[in-house]
Length: 331
Image (cartoon, rainbow, N blue to C red; front, side):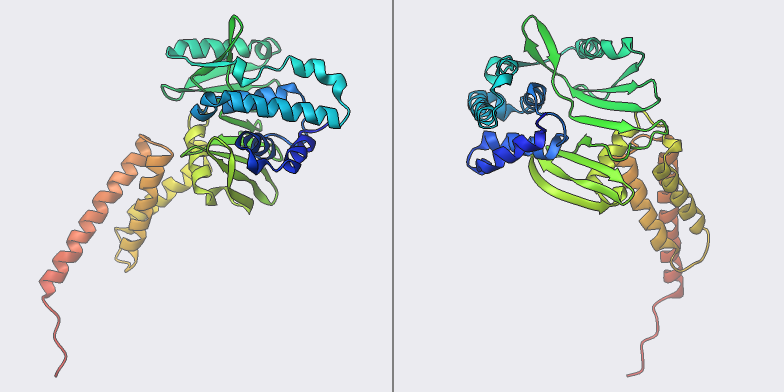
């Protein structure tokens, strides 16, 4: 069957920059979707279930629908795939869809459970976690021990007499050891309307960051260390703290060790101890703010280090005052 990448190449030949709707579809297929997936109506339905979360496309659904309809029709005709026209005719475009907010969180939980009921019947285990008033995390433990994470916003698509979930804003896959699965496309929501699309292999992390309702490419990573990609790293750790014990997280362990060492160092008279402690304190504050908010151990270590640095500065100032001003050189 025709892969997603072939349809994306077809859109590229149409100069998508001249049409924002076409550009958005091309960017989504190129940057977010797995390129080797079969190109079928479900791919476009997934695209709609994601872009309709943006106000821009809900307000411009007519243009989006007309553009995508025309491009699919011309693609099928050009590549002699009119035999699949009936399957594509059943595709629902945005001008026939409504996206509604789910104001009661229990309704969102119930909808998640309903849409994943088939997986539960097959033996997978499902757990949901309330991330905020507007997002829910779905954790799926498979029979093989792997874990799939999906994060959904509190929105739904009206589908006849029923509601359907919109597409997840994050979708991550983990090994039974709770490490990110290698060579698998990972999608993670970032800050400021960004989305991280990446995979890991033996050489590091590869992928890109898209931004805004057009999924425009914003930044690219090749053989990068995960810890060097600040927004991705913090976004990932903020999410992982809901389903991975922080005390088993190497980053958490490293931060605890760094803060404990800095606290011990303040008790010595090494000339660089204050500067080293301040660097550790800055990292500890960032970790506490961005990754493990309200963690009791980190809060205790950071607070103790803040007090120790304050005391050290006071002692240093007192000693300097006791020595008096230095002698001036002979004129």
